[in-house]
Each structure stands twice: as C-alpha cells, then as structure tokens.
Amino acid sequence: MAASPTRDDFDSYMTPNYSPQQAIPVRGEGSRLWDQAGKEYIDFAGGIAVNALGHCHPKLVDALTTQGNKLWHLSNVYTNEPALALARELVTRTFADKVYFCSSGGEANEAAFKLARRWAFDNFGERKHKIISFKQAFHGRTLFTVSVGGQPKYSEGFGPVPGGIQHARFNDLDSVRELIDDDTCAVVVEPIQGEGGVMPATPEFLQGLRELCDRHQALLVVDEVQSGVGRSGKLYAYMHYGVTPDILTSAKALGGGFPIGAMLTTDRVAPSLAVGTHGSTYGGNALACAVGLAALTTIDTPEVLEGVERRHALFREHLEVINRKYGVFKEIRGMGLLIGAEMSDAYEGKARDILPLALEQGLMALVAGPGVLRMAPSLVIPEADIQEGMARLELAIERLVSASE
Image 1 (tube, rainbow, N blue to C red):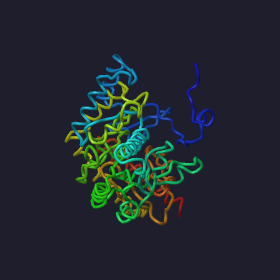
Image 2 (cartoon, rainbow, N blue to C red):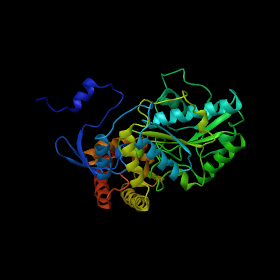
Image 3 (cartoon, rainbow, N blue to C red):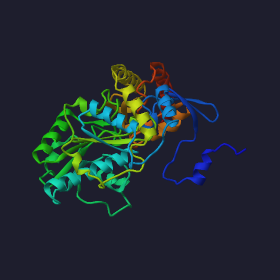
Image 4 (cartoon, one colour):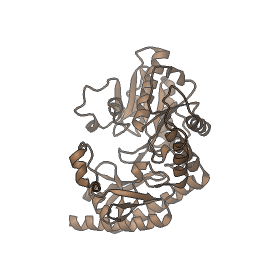
C-alpha cells in the first residue's frame, strides 16, 4: 500500500508557484477541517471566498452525487439541463439577460474583456478599444486579465503584455476623468478590491463610474468573482450601490467549492459574443452547473443573507476587542463576510506571519497582500465557531506580539 502523501511531496512533484502551509487537510464538515494527523481547524479562509456554505454541505453533496449518476460532460456542441436551469436563475435574480459559463474567475474576466472590446468594435470600430482598470486591482492570472489587474508584480517577466490598458486610482473619480474618453470601451472595477487589501468602493465612486461610462458610451464591467454570491450580504455587491453594470463576472462561491465561472450581460451587449467568437471546453459542465444551482438557490435566501450581516458584526466586534488589547491593526474594513484587518505601523508587512501561528492554534485564515489579514469564511459559519476561531486568533496574535518585543 502506498504511503500517504506528505508536504515534502509538494516540493518534489509540483511546480513552485505556490507555497502551501505544512498541514494537509483531508476532511471537512461545515466550518471545521481535520488534517492527516486528526488535528481540527476552524476555517476562516473559506478556500479564498469559495466555500460559501462550508465543507460538504448536504445540499451540494446531494446535487453533485445526483447529477454524477446522470450525466457529467457533453461539451458545448450540446446543451444540458443543469446549465439551462442555472442560467435561468442567474438571469431571474440579477440585472442580466444572458449568461456565459466557464470554469474559473479568470476565464470569466477574460470573456468579459474580450466581449467589451468586441462590442465596441462591432458598434464603433477598432479605435474604441481602451480599458480602464484600477491600481491594486486583481482580475485573474491569464495574460490579459493580469494586465488589466493593477498589480505589476503579477505581470512582471511575462511581457510584452496586451496594450490599450490604463490604470486609475480606486475610489478616485478624478483619476478616471483624466483617462476616459470616447476611445474607452470599458471600465473594469471590483466593488470590493479583494487581493488589493479588502477595500470597498464608495457609493459615489461606483455611481460616478456608471455616469462616466454612459457619457462616453463605454461598458461598466463589475468583477464580482470574490464579492459575489452572498459574500457582501446581498446576492451581488453591486446591489448595495444602486448601480447596474453592463457585464458582471462571477465564480468562487458560485460553485460552493466546485469549479465554475460565469459572465453575465445584457441583450444590448451579448450579441457581440456570436458563434465562434469565444468558447470553453468545460463551460456549462453539467456537474458544475448542478452544484452551482444548489449553491445559488441556497444562498440567495433571506435567512442566509441576513445572517451574513449578523456574522459580520460578530467578526468586527471580536477583532476590535483583540486590537484594543494588542494594537496590531490600523483599520478593520470590508463588507459582509469579506473582512480585512490592516496591520498597524508597528506590525507593517507582518500579516503573513500570522498564518502559520494561527494554523498552530487550529485556525485557517488568509492575507490580502503582506499588510492585511483577510477572512472569508462560510456564509453560514456557526456563531460558536466564530467565537472559538477568534479565541484561537488571539493566541496567534499574542505570539506574534511576543516575538516582536
């Protein structure tokens, strides 16, 4: 019998673009996980905002196993019932008229950016091709999406990168006014910058972007890969702002842990994604769409969405108590259950140091860059798990503080 894989096997057999923690989880239930040695962890990471209903949620397991005994994959030479059902629900519950399915958030954004340029080409000609994004934005890891993203570290060494992309300052409308003109085809924005430090947009900023796009006949593309599907306390974060996008991208929580992405758009824009212009081998996969349908319909209920707001208040309350004691945070911010705690000047750049310390205490968390501790747990995490997880986080921070003295 082969020996169980170890963390050393990662270094031996896998490319070094990741540096995972030492523990290897093997089982999960709700907001708790167990590793190979049987040690228990509380999960505040949520697979980076993916496991929106925790681990092995019964409704998702049932959807997967039921569909797994019917039909797995067809390709887009044919359609399938789960894809059609999920598309109908997304249209019914949002601004959108049409849906394109793929397998990840990066693919959804790739499709969105291609559609924006093709729409502009079809309606205005090839000059209207400029895309405005924002510094510290993150939109994926394909060459196009990493170029639209506003973090040069992710595109360094992969040039030449696609042209026609400009970066304004997030939450700064004047910086957009300086760049936008009639050759702009799209403005791309995250309602909450996730990888950029868990920074919510102000209402004035998003509303101003909508007005500028309308004035210059550009499309407003809203990237909700991380903020969508209940994470903010509404089904999609744009719903907090009274702003309607032209294109929206969704992934992560949409599959509750099963890989799926979607691009949503309107009847005005969708015709430019005509037959042959774009595609995805796995997009609309029956397994993924069956699980996505179960996740969407479970999350988009008053019980779950109102519970997100209550849980946000609990997280913030506990973090503020910890901060009053240790003074490690400069600011606690975010929306719903996408929460960031920016490190204070005395602990600048040390957010990542908390992760292994937390893991030792039986807690999984995230960072958003070196200076922000990030939490994106299950939307239905029990309040008792929040309390216990915060007790474990405090022990980790106590160790961080002691080591820094």
